[in-house]
Amino acid sequence: IIFLWRRKARTMALSVHIKKKLKDFELAVDFDMEEGIVGFLGSSGCGKSMTLKCIAGIETPDEGSIVLDGEVLFDKKAGIDLSPQKRKVGYLFQNYALFPHMTVRQNIEAGLEASRKSKQEKKDIVERLLEQFHIKELENSYPVRISGGQQQRAALARMMAAEPKFLLLDEPFSALDTYLKEKLMQEMMTYLNQFKKGVIMVSHSRDEVYQMCTDTAIMHQGILETVGKTKEIFDNPGTVNAARLTGCKNISKAEKLSESEVYALEWDIKLTFPEHIKIPSNLTHVGIRAHEIRPVKFSDIDNNTSIKLNMVDCQLKRISEAPFEMYLILENKSGKSTNPLWWKVTKKEWKEIGETVPETVELPVEKVILLQH
Image (cartoon, rainbow, N blue to C red; front, side):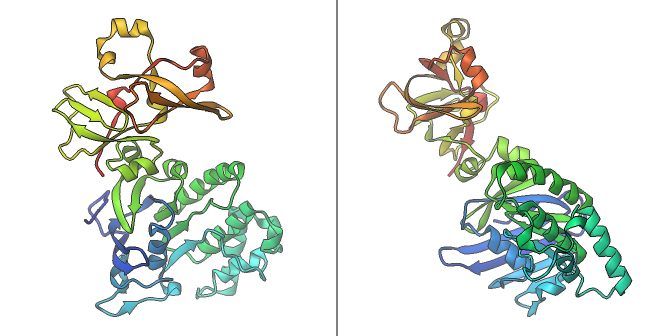
């Protein structure tokens, strides 16, 4: 399957159509994209980083082609395989890969080695980047002496010194603590918006992808399974794997009973849908996000018969507390379910319901995600 995402009818910034045999599966990636930030979201070992390395020229595909702004970077049949230095692709590694024996200034200067600019031009570029990335005061420091966030800014400055046509970011926040990560994500978004060219960011964090990427590609076992606008992918992931990666904790095998009814086997619940929701014939699963489950008040049941169709009598299996939320794992009282429901409720909502476990909860069908395997 070839996935394409486009915004205008013009030459694609990046075209990748490659295959590479890996240990457990074959990487088979096909896509074309323009400028913008695209997030590759997938579990560890699914081929995300290998795809970046093939684009950058660090790894060689077994077949296919890679074209950037009309220039062929790789073409197996034509025997073209440009070196990483000639591809004009910036690559930010997970650990930033700064040269440990060089100062911050020298690391940035290293990004200009292949440039034909004059000595003064190179000096001016280094000065500008030191200021732009707020690391001027660190110019004579070695990487081991600066923080993870400072290392990331230094690595970004070195990458931008080479004036890349395209950026590849490989898990850029994986080495940072939560507070620093949130701060640097905002900084990174500022830099990337100024770049105004194509960017691919690999991550296994749905929060990073949701906040930073205009488009999202869900990767699974070497292929791009689902591609689209980030918000649309999170609202309607389409596949079981995509639903899990975007944070859906409640997924059950399902059977389509009619044009309006679905039976969730693992929850032992029959769900009835209104006419405007079309149940696909290839449906295999249903899902609902933990925060979308609602407690049912018996007064609501008396006034709204539709709720009766999509509710379940439950009992508490386990409860745990997070700093701002409560997590309740609920079992169907029928005793026929094989998979409990995870319910996430804010502490404010928890207080509003008297900090008591409801006897009945509703699965609002407009929030139920229809999936295929």
